[in-house]
Image: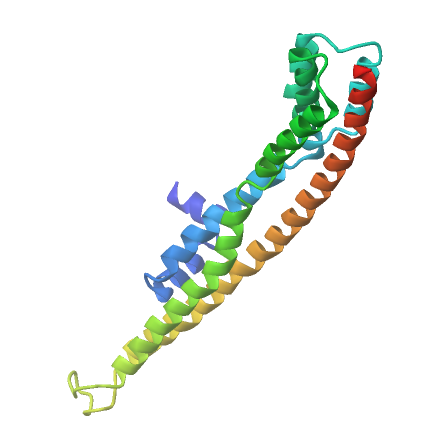
Length: 227
């Protein structure tokens, strides 16, 4: 079974050798890479258009309320539909609780729901940005540790057949590996994290702008409906 696993993952020995050569400083970077990948996948799933702003939802909400405020079960279905549905449903809920609610009350409710929606859309983006910022620093930490080992290898005491001050070639090679591998791996983790963070930020900003315009249009509809 072990041979089959090695055949299925031929890169495993290479990866393990790199991890061993990089030393313990690479483990925080590995943790950051796994966490960053999980957050990126989660955001791709959570920020699907169907879960945030279904294309026809605003038109459907306006159409279903042309002749009056829809029933509570319809409002609940709208709220559970998507993030935009939560914002629109908040306007219906105000009119359910107070049919003579003022325009300011309606807009305040929609704005509050919009702020909650913004917080939901921006979830975990700070963590991805932190990984993008911290990974190069962790790589730099590994580089410093590798440099310390390099300098330590030059302080040979003449043991094991070496002349005093000749250094330890094995320790020197290990120090170089720690320094270079951690630097490279820190950049490998940081660059994709930064790219995905900027991508998600742009996507969230687009959603928020579209949601703001939709909420404004829906607010005007609710004001006319209240009259």
